[in-house]
Image 1 (cartoon, rainbow, N blue to C red):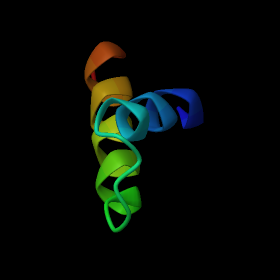
Image 2: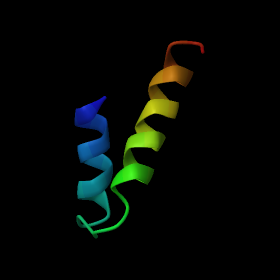
Image 3: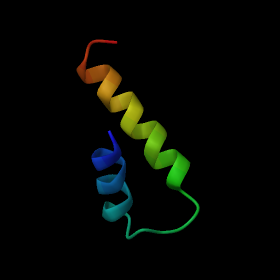
Length: 36
């Protein structure tokens, strides 16, 4: 999940202040992929 959050940050140019959003988005994607 950390890798996915990192990729999200990378896609928006590592703009500061969005770290929690990146992490939560990654959590949602993983849960969705796992059927949860």
